[in-house]
Length: 139
Figure (tube, rainbow, N blue to C red):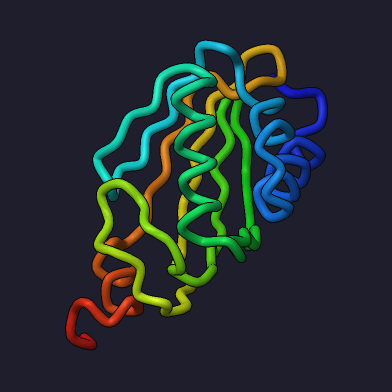
């Protein structure tokens, strides 16, 4: 388990919000598996994760994450956050860029080994995201 969970969470979050791909990858083990449940996409290893992260920043150049809360138990962290940005580029598995801004609640579940993520699973509401892109009617 990480020696300082709060420091790990703040560091990973800051890396995403500053769009520093290499710094994000610092927090992940070489054999990390990163699963985006809403997209149905599994990225295995740092090169696939690098591609996923790079695509995220291309599609959402102002992408940010705001941590709301987190807790840890043994080797797992559960982070409640809001991710936001503007859909200005294309992203595999999503419709073409809409130019619309969004903010979506997000659960980021992380399993650690030796202070590195070995498994990351993201959960968020794709319908909410599509509504904010103007691609689904308001609920």
